[in-house]
Image (cartoon, rainbow, N blue to C red; front, side, top):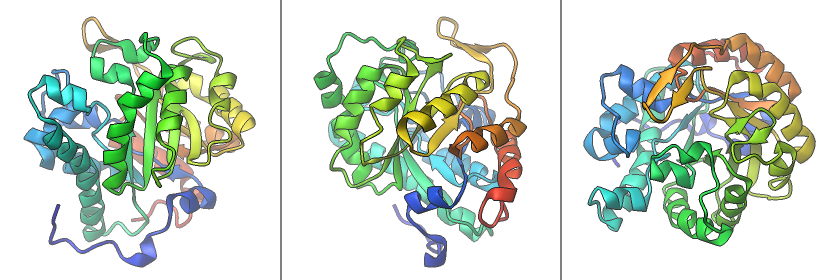
Length: 322
């Protein structure tokens, strides 16, 4: 895509792994809640991915809101974007590939706009790779156990990963993974792509959503060179602290955490229930236990991300200043 906004100066660009080594990095919050707050209807099966075709500018604006709030990393709107999902809507494979690549381009455009508005820190783009269940849009992404083999899951994920990697993100976000078998498939699929990745499970207590012990699930990524961080997302804030300790101990890698607000998703009614239990002050404890990528997932908006950035400012290079 093209833009008349200047590129980010070279002095503000460094590899993603170097940013992790330098100190905590702030992730963004939920894409869907930010789009909904702007008045967009995300009720169909493609969720926020539908706007890639219909309202791409809205996605760029959502990313920009998080960068301006203090996020260092924007996660693309490709979580629910798959060749199979687009095909159900009559979108042919070539166009689907264009939309996948566009998700990275829109986030990159937001980095340029943020720089033009005075944000003066390195900004990164993480290409979201959601689980197989996200394509099904039936809640199975919170259960796993799809009845597919590891080889079948790898064959599902690899073509999308190849397109996203070719679009030039700084990192691939293998996120909301409910099942260790799917993690095995994803870890195979990222090999040789030339882009680092993080692996993030959706969990319930000390187990994956499919019921496997987190210690075993995290261990799968310990020796995978492409993986620069391991952790959890789309979970309760209360589940984060023990998961951070386990991930750091088992893998020796930086830990990524971005929980939900604390509300729960009812897949039958397609609505959020309960109240928020996510306090930005919690992130200091997660950081002390090994978390280096810290943000929010569903129902976490720019205000909470600003609070996280503020809580971590004292130990971030250059603080949170734009």
